[in-house]
Image (cartoon, rainbow, N blue to C red; front, side, top):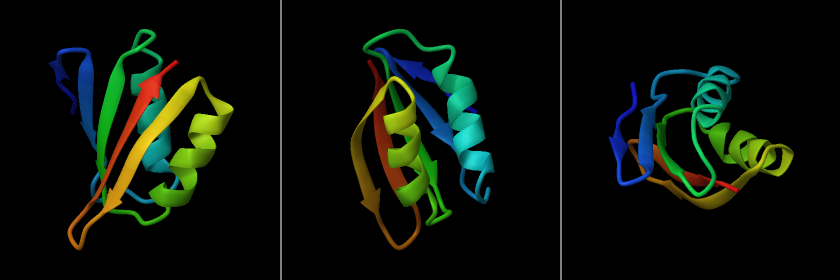
Length: 79
């Protein structure tokens, strides 16, 4: 589901709809240390609303959200 590369982790939640992507992201974030990043690939447009809310409510910083025709690419960092 996710890999480790230079303190950057990856998770693909494509095909899942709200609230599953954020629940899966939350589970991974719990295993990360301060400063580590999580790159996310999603297909549910709700991630563009849910992820900023999740970051405000947790100890994370939203780095970016990039929406393409195929997927939504995001990155967050644990503070």
